[in-house]
Amino acid sequence: MSTHTSTFTRYWPWAALLFLSCVWGSSFILIKTALTAFTPVQVGAFRISAAALTLLPFMLYRLGREGMAEVLNKLPWLTVVGLVGNGIPAFLFALAQTRLESSTAGALNALTPMFTLLLGVWWFGLPINKTKLLGVGVGFSGALILILVRGNGQFDPNWQWALLVVAATLMYGTSVNTVGRHLRQFNPLLSAAIPLALVAPFTLVILFSGDFLQRCAEPDALRAIGGLAILSVLGSAISLVLFNRLIQVSGPVFASTTTYLMPLVALGWGWWDGELLGLSHLLGMSAILIGIWLIYRGNRHS
Image (cartoon, rainbow, N blue to C red; front, top):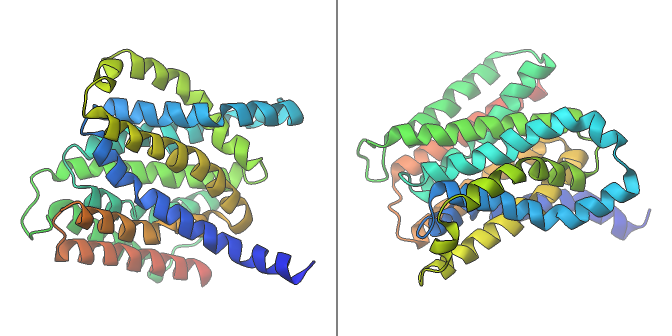
């Protein structure tokens, strides 16, 4: 193996991690932009439908080369990923951001690696120790701060909406572990495209059963459509393929640490868009990241 190839193999997971963190960290401001012209249901449905259609020709080409036998064997797990890794969270995030600032949603998304680790402990039967328990306590304390306290330090009356984001991150953690456990040797393009294709028929029906086309014709819809296009093609289609490849190479725990950097990107976009960022955001996000680090350390020393 050449030195160039060895260097690429060593560092490309970190480059992929940085790329995914920036793309997915920007998804919250893109959702906010899309919600200026479309309903949260339309935003979620468009995101999944467009991502599925983007990957469809590549999926069909790959299936033509590899056949359907392995796909049918993995179909239950691909369906799980389609529902909890793509379909349902897309709607939950869009619905939550009708009442939450994009920066808060992005910071709460840092719970994903915590749930990935906890579910991994549960599924794989890894032992629980004091370090992990401390990490869980610290991490969820940070989430509680983000849920209950606004950037200005006042109580947030819309705190219930943040629970939608928490539910979405729990689903993401389930999906990451499913890919890592049952689809790790599966082609990363297919493990991204097939779950999207499984839920896309339903999201297409949802999308076009309302006034989506009429809203597209509105003068102020162009910016929202652009945000949706970037969110769908780059944030959901291309990034999912790269993410699944990252799980194959580096494992689900490393891959899920994209959410270490995602909140920083989301907070930066929120600040740029005029959202109020306060001490509660920094305290809550820092506590979640410390909690994740403690759980990860506890896993290493188990």
